Length: 318
Image 1 (cartoon, rainbow, N blue to C red):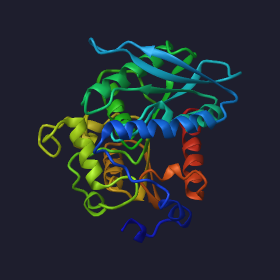
Image 2: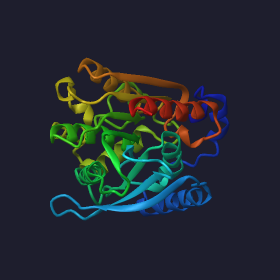
Image 3: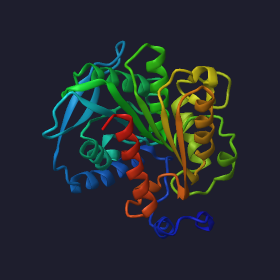
Image 4: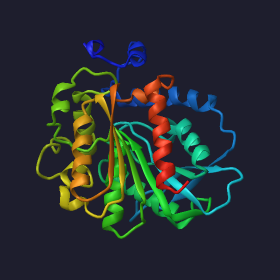
């Protein structure tokens, strides 16, 4: 059982209160998540931040992409920017998921934060969501998302599938010659559809995310029967890129959770970046599980947030 894992003591106390993720009825799962995060969004203090909306034209006939923007009040531009991509197994989520943390990043970094509301699988499989994220990044870099942005000081950030999307976006922008990305922050990244690492095989009953759910998410994103085959693009599953495909990418900070099926693919990706000559910082947070950041009062979670702000401050010259 999940409770047999030696979790951090503060996290262990919260595990019983975390409902299991059930993707069998996707409409119900989306509605339940939307209700839960809407309550958190309504309760959070947005003082000091102007929260707005922008729209990026979709690429090549795709629909336009809604963006949520965060601008620090009183800060003079051009400002550095964080492009924050939400997670949700490629199937769930919206900018609401990371609203509180995006507000914190905006305040603490005196930076613009932009979060894309990209299309979700399985209705919109790869590469729809990635192209939406790219369209939003282009709008941000051009300064057309509202606030004046320093185009040479843009970081991408994501968690779980959002981190996988941030990784793929960094690779895609590099391959297309821009926009330039200065730094990438990847939390518990979903990078490998093959699910063949030791952690992916071992953690079948961990809180929040399991091997079974990871398989469901890849099937939704890539299409039934596609995960694990030879036909998967590295822009869908960046673990497929190989060292040669990572050369020239911007520096990275990779954070992984100890009891997470995605742990080892994050570690493997950090090692591949290092082998490609990309400056990379890797932090494994002990006693943690996928999605542990939701337990905001835990000391290890507060450390995660503080460290994220610190590495972005350094990377963006704040």
